[in-house]
Length: 346
Image 1 (cartoon, helix red, strand yellow):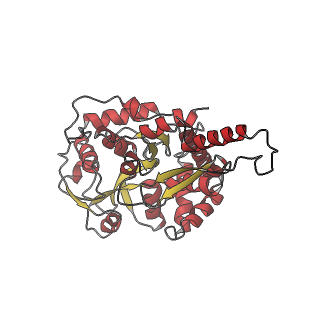
Image 2 (cartoon, helix red, strand yellow):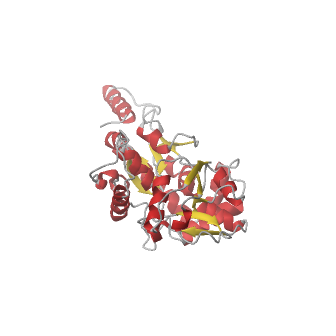
Image 3 (cartoon, helix red, strand yellow):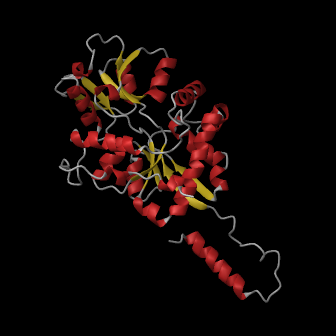
């Protein structure tokens, strides 16, 4: 299917054919709109951080421009990126495997197209001096500082039950204030992204202990993905390919040139990113931990086995619900929830 830009190019070519008998002027020798860029809108899942660094690098290093794209990175809002994509407000959005799958089974038009991170970055954390918390079952009856997403309580409950507990705890929705509440003892535990909040805690000398999801029955996953809608991928496959391949260049540049990437990231978000040491340490952790690029040199590729495993876990844990809020009774075909084709197409 042709995009509006291709249609305009066809019209220009047709007009040129009608005037071949006329002398060609310098103005007519080049299409008037040859420099026009195709727009792409990208929604963030959170305030700007190093998970997003490849997007800002690709934009400000000119990788998108070179691909003929005009990419707008939308400011973070309370509306999830997945919702913005599914409703065609954004063409791409940052989501996680769990978030994408819960939204998709509830009817959202979402397809994962790029794995920003190749392995799990999240963990459950609590203050190191809590002698009463030795394993997840000790979280029964305690208070969780949460972020308001639909899957958090189900995820934590499954961790506790896997460890022999009941999975019963109180939840207080606090957003980013959860970390301050944890520090002052207002809540007993929360979830964090190690490569950002965890690194920040280390820099500040905050003593924490953590439970890794994988140690308590949760399969490894692509914590951060770029998702699109099937409608967009079907209508504009060339545009999707150009965007994703230019985005991969941005993340590869960040791995290979971290100092320059940090400069670009901070320059683009000077109001939000005022702690250079945190940005540098976070990117260092992402590179050293092979989150952006695996030891085998893989960047961006979605692992089908990981997607199927996390999908099966969510189904068996009764986290996945349909559009009516009813727990699914049959596992979906998770291979339809992601595609590496847009990134790897020639």
